[in-house]
Amino acid sequence: METLIILIFIVGYLAIALEHNLKLDKLIPALAMMSILWALVAFGIETFPNWFDSGAHKLVEGFSSFSIDEKHHLLEETLLHHLGKTAEILFFLLGAMTIVEIIDYFDGFATFKNYIKTKNKKKLLWIFAILAFTLSAIIDNLTATIVLITILQKIINDRNTRLWFAGIIIIAANAGGAWSPIGDVTTTMLWIGKKVTSAKLIEYLIIPSLLCMAVPTFIASFMKPFKGNIANIVVESENSDNKYGPIMLYLGLGSILFVPIFKTVTHLPPYVGMMLSLSFVGVFAEIYSRSQFSISNILENEGDDVVGFHSPVHKSLSRIEMPSVLFFFGILMAVAALESLGMLFLGAKGLEAIIPNSDIVVMLLGAGSAVIDNVPLVAASMGMFQEPLDSHLWHFVAYSAGTGGSMLIIGSAAGVVAMGMEKINFFWYFKNITWLAATGFVVGAIAFMFLRTF
Image (cartoon, rainbow, N blue to C red):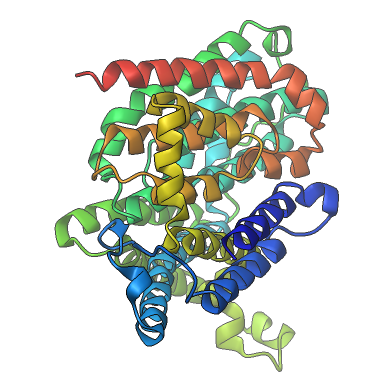
């Protein structure tokens, strides 16, 4: 039965990694894999020799001698435990996604166009890199990439030039997401899973992540594509067509930044603070949307639920990318099934015997995240390693998983969305951007190893 479970996981994992080749959305194999794995665990509960207590972080003593009823009761408790932990992450992400969509509803991100006031390619390169690095630490690397490439498309007409800028944006966005507890799904998982604290994560990763962004950007600034000026650049003088855009941008970003502070003060799970932030932003969104309400809107949409139709919160919730949320649910619960059987714990012990140096293991994890999704990799590492809160291993996992994906266009959510928006060719990225991303990754990793000695 254990062999079959591992085989199902491998097949599901391959289906997720090859979603573009199979033309099958990765949420489908993730959900199928999760359901099948837990069904097999339930069917074979009598035969399994081990059971892992995720709360105590150790194998359950004497599990093989438990009665059938005791084993089934333990299974139900374990499933409920993992469902609760997964729900914490999902509700946190839902809150953050909704706030971002509310900002976009008021065209708040158009405010960033006000920073673009130069035609010099080198200066533009640094502006976009710094914006990507900073913005991704607040609203996550995926959203930051979408926002900045949208702006890029509005100010640069030449597609070949945009491709180079997009490549650096991907590197900078992934680097920016790695040092913030709210900047990337994987760092959020480690933060909510009580593997890292926001203060220590920032302390140890801000400089390595900054170098991971700055070194490739510095090298690229001397390359031919970034020399000279942009022809026919469109410089926007207005912040936004919506007068409430800038206000909602700063309210939204400030509310997201408030979440780690709320957790530190109250010691409550982060999703509670995110729900409070969402309610705060929602109040202002509703007030500002009512001030724009006109009789013409009512007449044009006669027959609709006017309150719901014009509510920015309702509208934003309808635009949430639910496939991503369901994918996270499927993959986290699937990995939890392997963790519950003690497979990840025992696998980690075997890996330590083969490769005793944990730094090599973590760097391989970073390289692996360029090929396959980093969410299951980090989820697996959380079940494999038993290091305490704020161990340097967890900080290194956050850095490697967050930035390693930049080495391939398909290695991160930021890369995949940029690939779709600009039709970036896999081999073009591999030839021109991969070496830059790899250089930044290695420099940042060396910097982290040096900083942790203090």
